Length: 239
Image 1 (cartoon, rainbow, N blue to C red):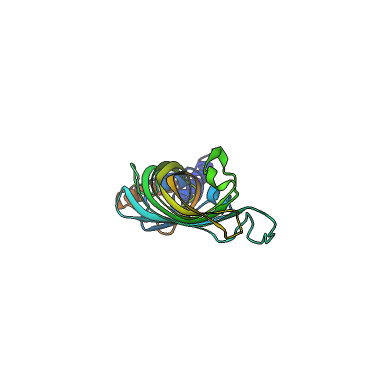
Image 2 (cartoon, rainbow, N blue to C red):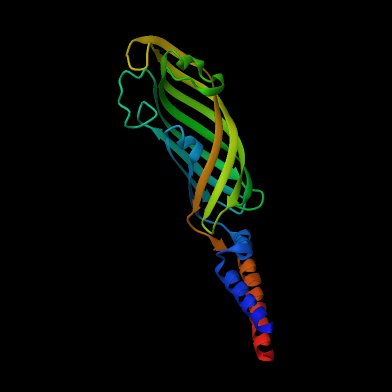
């Protein structure tokens, strides 16, 4: 029985050292100070056939500075769909720098943020959900949009360098564009401008490129390791 307990404690010590599975992984993940750069991609945004990438840099214990980049260079849902008889067209490029505040620490749990959005778009005869952008249902608009957004979300640690984020928010701004008769013809109808509402919804897969453990948490882990090792040695000695 004593030998069995020693084996169990040895396994626990190895898990604590490596931080690869179980409770030991959660302990190490929660006690780490996640610094440096992080890359992410928004799966919801990607579902619109838009390639996208997010970059974040920790600038303190509670703040990160980053930017989102999006590109849809092809006119239809699929990049290889070249059917000219398809009346729909949707192309755009997006750049959105952002600032996030993390109440606990960077890249851990809850966050809120603000972003500045610029996008150049070329959209025609597309029915967006919830009645958004009715001007492009029967016409084509090509122009630029500028907006300020607020958002919030939560981050779950999957592994030492991997996280999943859920976020939601809304941006409000202004757009100016040129109107055209149809998605692929060039007959202009005059300028258009107005209020722009940009919803933000994301499920992000994030890769934290660097991760450093805080000195005080490293000391605690080392102390726990020594305690486990002493108990194992004591049990072996008693045998």
